[in-house]
Amino acid sequence: MQNFKYSQSAGLVNFETFHWICRIVLHATVLVKCCTEAHVTVDPPSHLEIYDPGYLGMLDISWHAADRKGDCAVIYELQYQNGAGNRWKSIRTKHLKHRAAFNLSNEISVKIRTQLKGPCINGSQIWSDWREANYSVPVTGTPESKIGHFQCIYYNWELLKCSWSPGKLHNLTSNYELQYWHKGLSHKMICDSYQSTNGINTGCIFQSEQLEHYTDFFVCVTGTAGSLPIRPSYFVFQLQDIVKPAAPEELSVFKTESNEMLLEWKLPEGTVPLRCLKFEIQYKEENDIWKTEPEQRETMSVIDKSNSSNIFCARVRGKVNMFCAADGFWSDWSPEICWKDIFQRSCSIRPKSWYWKWMDL
Image (tube, one colour):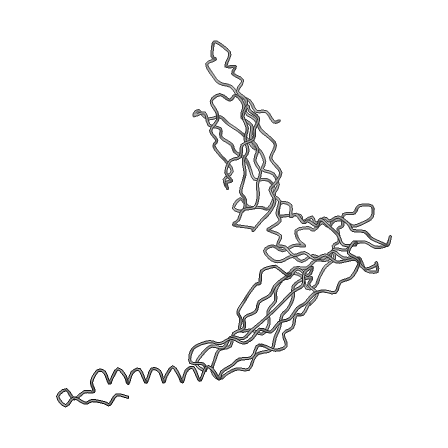
């Protein structure tokens, strides 16, 4: 090591010696920090459990805390997957439980680890290993007894209809039962208004007072009590994402002085507000080919008409927009309305005025 040199004229340790002292102190600090962190470990949470409270897919995940290390903060990273190949969802929490929605038709995988962060490890962070658990409902009934083609449509934000095609039942007394639950209910409920085909339940109708929006709606179609086991089918969705509005009403078409076609219509009767709707317009002229306009949120539109066309037909339909739902169904088309110019271009003398009439095809 280089000897310290003292300058009597300056009364200071020279710069080269000072530089070496700084380097020694820095390396010593890093070495102490590394040695300290190397001896600090953290365990994963223990007793990871998945509990089914009977809500047809809303499950409770719980665990026991890892041992605390001095004054460090402890955070848990929880990841869960609903079916092989589906993406993992992840949350970080200080709590010891979490409730999440799952489709019980698929196997559920859960894993959790501990994060340690704070002064006990010099302000850095370390992670534990993962702790894992799996859950699936017991399989009952034969595969051919399971329903198919299940679909639910929430008509005009008022009436929910779910339907399915039956499987093969091996007992004349067996039938299907639809169970459902959402967070507004204290326990799962059973459908009280079935639609049937040849005595077999193939659908269920819900009134608006039985429903709740912007929350998960869980459904299980299984066998009725006392019947032979039927393979259950599970579904989870949110009502605002399966709305089918009623068709727009009172569509009218006018020709303006600038040879444009003005379309106006009214909202259908129901509870879907205008702010939640978008509309699609189709029109055709004499070539009888439908053309589609860009989607819009207003209840009127102006479309350029071909100068050579004497007829202009239009129709419009609606759908819940992205500001109120993630998905949905298009309404039926409104009745097709046509404007027709009764002036015949082959006439040698033009009348002084133009006339048109409405035709509801």
